[in-house]
Structure formats: C-alpha cells, structure tokens
Length: 275
Image 1 (cartoon, one colour):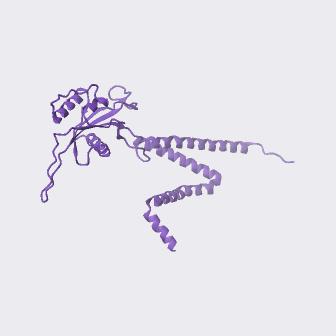
Image 2: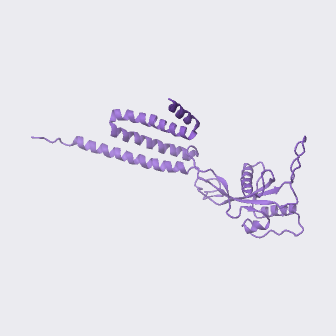
C-alpha cells in the first residue's frame, strides 16, 4: 500500500511521467476501443487493418489543417539570428567591414560620438535601409533580440543601454504575379536588421528618492547589432505528418482493396467437386 501511494505521489509531482501516462491511456482508450469494436465485427486481423487505416487518414487530415493554419504540431518559430562573426559591431568602421555598407562611412576626425551616430543614420537612409518606428512591433522584437546578443557577449549589462534606432532591409518574397498576387511567392530574399544601441549614463541611487530617468552617455561610442531573419520551420512537422500519413493511408487502402478483390475472386470461383 505504501509503495502504491508513493507511485501516485511521484506521478502527481513529475509532469513528464504524468504526460507520458496520459498519452498512453488516451491511445489505449480511444484507439483500443475502436479496435475492440472493429475486432468483434470484422475479426481481429481485418479489424486492426481497418482501424489503422482510419487512424492514418485522420493523421493526414490533421496534418493538412495544421499545415494550413500553422497550429498544432509546430516547428521552430521565426526569429532574429546572429550573422556569424559580424553580430556586435563596436565602431563605425565595422559597419563597412561587416558588409552593412558598401563603402566606409566618412566621419570627421573632430566629430563627437553623437554626431557620428547621426552621420551613420544618414548613411543608412542613403543606402536604402528603412528606419522602423518605435510603435512598430518589429522594432521591439529586433531590440529584444539585440539585447540578448549584447548581454551574451558581455558588451552591456541589462539596463545599461537603450535601443535608439532599428534599420531594416531585404526580406522580399518572389515570384509574384503583378503587385498583389503573391500566393506562389514561396521564396524570400535575405532579411537583415541593424539595431543602433546607445550606452546610458550610470545612475546614482539615493535613498528616499525615485530613481532618475537614465540619459544617453554622449561620451561613449554607439554599438550596432547586425542580425539576419531566420524564417524557422513552423509548418515543417505538419507537412511531414501529412505526407507520411497520406502514404500510409493509401498503402492500407490498397491492401484492403486487394483483400476485397481476392475475396470476390474466391467467392465467384466454381467450387471443387470431390468424388
């Protein structure tokens, strides 16, 4: 009795074990119940074949629905990924070396870091990069991804920087039929963003007073985070399930059809007369 109680408590506190048991019970109850009904009416082997065919057909249909709407069994979601070896750019010259700009940015020797950031912003506009508004959801997504790379590389600590601009380019879909018909545009050009990050001045905390609003430190260099869009594979598992389930379903249907033809042939044959 004590061992049984310990097992029940272990199942209750182990989500993985409980999930496995729920799946096993569901499969035995649903699939096993259908097979039991089929077996009592069609026989053990034919009932199993019919039940398995229905399961494969249901899996292929669910795969189609999940693939169309991007729900259910999903793969990796789209995200911003690091450009290998060129992600965190710590000076203006690194922008051209990383391939962001075609030519190095001309910055006067006596320019301050704030003026240098303005020159870089003008260069982005001149080379066709789109400046995202802060109200654009893509601005927040790119800024959050850039923050992860900055903190992973120990460039900044959390709260020591501010995203001041996000520049976007690429990502066009093709081929298109005209300007609006794009349902055959299955291919994409690479999609890049550059996040302009400014360091903040350290805050002096005083007891009994609200913390001051952090200000950008004009005496320090802006940092740039260069990222490429990873489109992910949200519909890939559903697509594989659709193809696999359809192949199994068609194969089982062919086996049922062949069995039916053999049965019809045997029933229509002239019975042998034993003298």
